Image 1 (cartoon, rainbow, N blue to C red):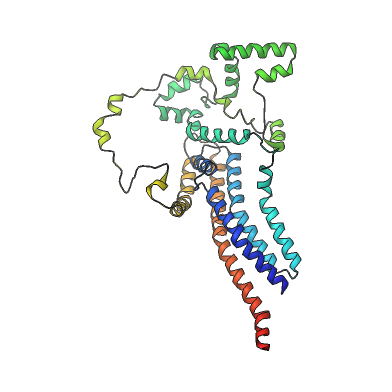
Image 2 (image 1 turned 45 degrees about the horizontal axis):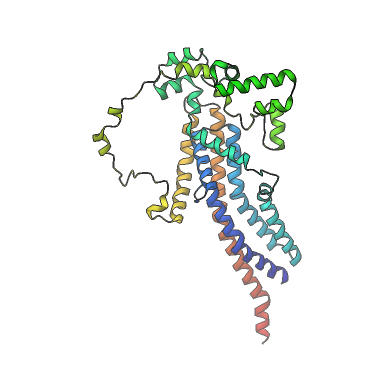
Amino acid sequence: MYAELMALIMCVLYLITVLPDSISRFIEVEGAADSVYSRLLSLRRQLWIQGGDSITAMIGFKLDTVMATGYESMLLMFNLFIILHTDNAIEVLLDALAFIFVAKIDEEIVQSSHWDPNNRWITAGAIQVVTARIIRFRSLGSPEAFSTTYGIPLQTVIEACDEDENVFKNREVANSDANDVNLVTKEERVLHLFRDIAKEIGNKNALDEYRKPTKYFGVLGSFLGTLGLITPIFMKYTCYCTWSRWQKVLYLAPVPDLNNLLNGDDLDDIVPSRAQPFANYYPSEDGVSWKKLFVRHTIAVLKNELPNGLKTSCRQGQDNKVARIFIHIIGYMMTVTAYLFQIALPTYLIIVIFGTVYELITMDCLPFLASW
């Protein structure tokens, strides 16, 4: 009896505390909440769909979202199953406390003072996401894609980039251009001069001052960086700094005629419609409730994420097409599974509460009443 009573107490506690937190966390992680963190995740999801991130970033993003949503729901359902099959009240309490510890340990780690005290890593990650979302890196690494995007003849692009198939993505050329005083600003020339003097006299402290230090995130990042498997966190896009090639193609793109581009008559024809309304950065201002926005967002993810992801993975100039297609398929399956667990959790919790109450009544209360 006491084990069932303790299980009921834990279930009610989960219902009023853990379940609302899980739902709020799900809404925030899916990018549907009105917060900076949620909007960053929404941008991150757009980057996932448009194929602008690396293979490792794709895997990390999908694992992070699934672990923050479906994993917690699955863990709670598994914990409820264990509680229901435990005969000792103390063990029920200990199992419940163990679940809370396991479910929240990752959040406790990142909230500790030593993890990212100045928010440097999260700032760098946010800037990287916005940069990758806006700049068309896929076009910068393919002569055909660059020619199509900016209207420059293909042969002209190939000749300007010394017939390099990677176009502007070339680390050797970028490192060479970084040391060319004719391709840098006056301030950078002074820093290069100080850096060279620091090298000559062997002043390591001064060298770190005038040369961008190599930084990795975490112990695993430092280990992988030492092996040359990942790029330092603040040097993700230095391979695109091929200034000598940029000088050759910077003014080759055709310049649009503003008189034809911004024709007043054409602008008058641009009106919103029910089928194609104007995009609103704050949809809640249109009188739409957050529940409806969340449902709309969830349906859009389930409906468009996989087709759009597969489409961008097969685009011209995209790297690792087969790996991207595989990750998108597996990631979509994981997303659907996480959504199902999120839906099943409240249903399962309510069933467990009613089942436990019924068991307590039939086991103790009814025989007691019958004796009277």
